[in-house]
Length: 394
Image (cartoon, rainbow, N blue to C red; front, side, top):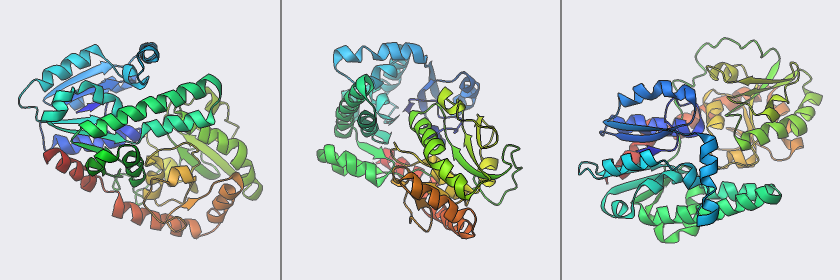
């Protein structure tokens, strides 16, 4: 199993999915894990994972060096993403593991890790690639919203990654994505591989994200709290909270004067920190547990303008039986009934109207209960991980 980020702790969207799949598969198979560690604090979790594996390799990801390394793609015609996640030690380790006759199955998590699996292995072993989302589309979306050099580089990356994703679909035994929308998108540019492209949804640990527990109210939440959660060094999240703070929140305050916008997530970018405004907009940084913030929120807001696949932040809010108001992009990957299990709003006026349609009234409670039932019915990690196990065992 190869992952572009250490699959523990499950504190980010991609790590949540990789952790639940890893944990399930480790109880069924003897696993060799090769992965990158991109945050110093995550080295403290290495021994936990070693204890669950037959063999492991942990490569340190120095982001500055990785960015410089990725520039070579401008000259060799490939995507910047692949050299970013290329490590000589990991390549040697992967070759050694793959040379062993008892390594019968391969799982790569995200497209960049497919570079470690030679074509002859793809042809002779059971190889599954979990792309999660179609990253090429995300980069193409960046290209459409940015300007100048950034637009060119984003469009280039989207085009190059799309070719890589098509090659993965054509050469791996099965290719997995997280939503039906992503499956249809991949089918569209890799139609010859359609019979081997599978949707396996994300899940939620509904025992952990449970509204039935008692959570101490965070001291920052003194008023009517609207909560956003996510890694705050991630460009789509940064764009979302800036957009909400500047274009939507002022409209909300006109009807709900005591509203406060609470941004919960690690590594807040400078642009995010600058949003903090007394008690009106709170930027928490990393917190030990997001559940108290969700539990005491009057609504969970997900105003993403750039989004691919399933948004775990949206599912976690639903699991906590909260009224969730999301943009069309954020809600696109969710199986559920808009208007009964969550609300979808596009422009600032309708987004603000959706918030104050649920916050002062009992409608938010009914919406939250329906949301919780949807998550229990459709987003079960055990069921979804078993589908991945079946692909590897086919």
